[in-house]
Length: 396
Ligand code: MG
Image (cartoon, rainbow, N blue to C red; front, side):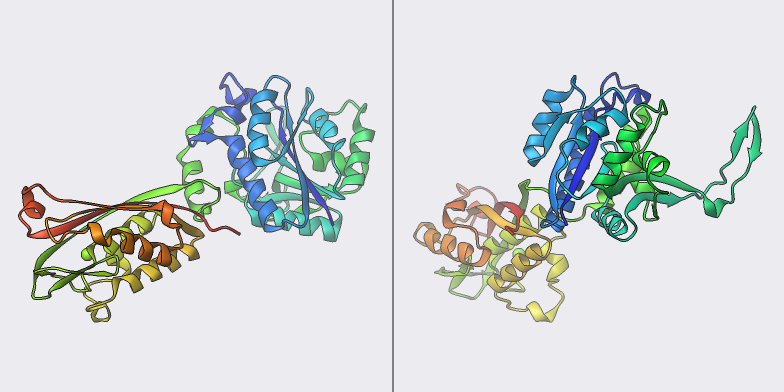
């Protein structure tokens, strides 16, 4: 069954007092609409065969800016009207799906699970409004006094998304067009003209609507953002840096850099094989993915890693990243060593890193230099490696 999604972004957002459409005002490094659209995109990616289109209703005033943002998501922008109802009515004219979900642009933290629950509810009950059971006592006021107290377990706060069969909600909006009522959500229009709307009780505090100015600086929303998006959710490239040092002092006649054995008049002291270059690469990759360092994953107090082949550990790190949805896209490794001469071994190192990480060789650089006689590197007491890594989402 094909499903369309309408996002309402045509409001003025006057209660926020930001002097502009609150959805386009700065918020968490982007704007609220960006996060709402990112949520819809996650839904579209998770049920790709069902979502046939996303239509965003914009005011004429903000059309250019909204359309540029929507285009980057591959979503369609249409011009809304003076009221929310009018905007939805106009957006519905463009809908091709048999089911339509209608979402407030100002709810940036709707989860995929909430969208999916809403869809399932429509399939079973023909309509759905995502709602949250009230935790406070609510009252009906009359002339400044409490007139009635509804039973708390009968009271819900209605949120979005709200879902319907397209033919039903189109009919409801047609019938409501000239009735003079002000509807603040689609479920109310549906209930008035078609049938009582079904409650889908998966609402959450996190799915609150950004309404007032203080909501935009509210740490609650930043915290929520951190909690509900642990996975990379967009195509953004992320970078990390890793540094490692090992001292000369073992009796070996070689050192190992990126898995390449290089003859040397001394070996590096280490719990593992002392591959200082791969250690820097691993930390850079873990850092880029926002994870803890190699000491966390491979503690040197663990005898299992005694003399360990660092390339095998790098394989594990690549696997950990993959499990988090990241693929290695590039490495820039700089090694500082007074000895031995590294130039003849650079190609071999690039080759090994490419084979293990899956990044193409032209995306990997290994450079080598000396310490010009200065410091521990220059005095030939140790080797230092720096790595900058970039990771991106695993290709689906
Ligand atoms: Mg190390």
